[in-house]
Image (cartoon, rainbow, N blue to C red):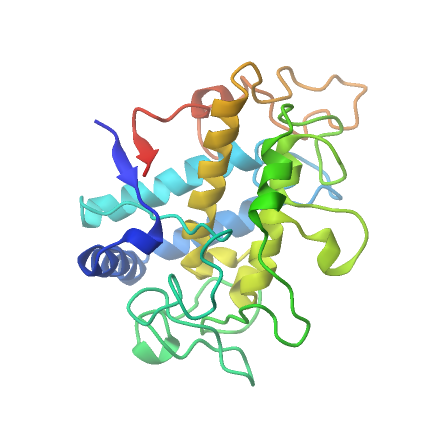
Length: 288
C-alpha cells in the first residue's frame, strides 16, 4: 500500500512536529550531513568534464526522485508515520505562512548576515549546526524574496509552460537547451540575472542563503521544494503517457555528451537503479 506525501499546508500540528523531530534526529545521528555531502559531490556543472547526474542533465529528475526517497526512508526509520510533504510555491507564496512558521521551518534570516533566528532549525536552538558547507557559515541562512533585489516565486503559468512541452529533453542534454520539459522545469535560462532562473532554480534563489549552491540540502526546505518538483514530473508523466525519459540510448563516441549523461537504461550513480526503473514509484508513494 503506497503512503501519501501531503501538501505541507494541510499537515496537522502533530504531523508537523513528527516531521521536524525526525529531521532533527537524523541530524543528531550525523545521517543528515551525509545527504548534504552527497549533493555537493554530485552537483557537477555542464561546463566541466565527466558524467553529470544531479543537475544540468536529463537525470536531474530521476536523480532527485531517488535522493528524496533515500531521505524519506531514513526519516521513516526514525518515525514510520512520517513522509516528506511538498511545498506548492505556486500557491503558498507568503514569506510568513507555511512552511515558514515557527513550528515548522522557521522564517527568513535577519538583515546583517541572513541568519535564521526562529524555528527548530535556527542555530540558537542548538540542534542545527551547519557542518558540511561550501562557505564558513555554521548557521542556517535565508533571504526570502531577496529584498535587496526582489524576485517573485514562479507562477502556475510558469509551471504550465513546462508541463505543456510533451518532449522530456533534447540534445545536447544540458543547461543550454530551450526545449523539453526537463530544463523548462529545472530552470536554466539564457541571459543573466533573475530572468535566467526559472521554476526550480528560481525557487532556490527566492529562498536564498543556504539554498543557493551545491550545499542547499542544509536547508530542510530543499526536500519540500523537491517533493513538489517530483510531483510536477508525475503530472507531466500522466499528461504525456506516450513520452518518456530521454535520451533512450547513450550518446555516441563522436557526440560531445558521450559518457557525460545517463541514458534511460544506464545506472544512475551513486545508485544501481536506472532512470527507467525510477519513472514509476507509485507502488511506494503517491501525492495527496
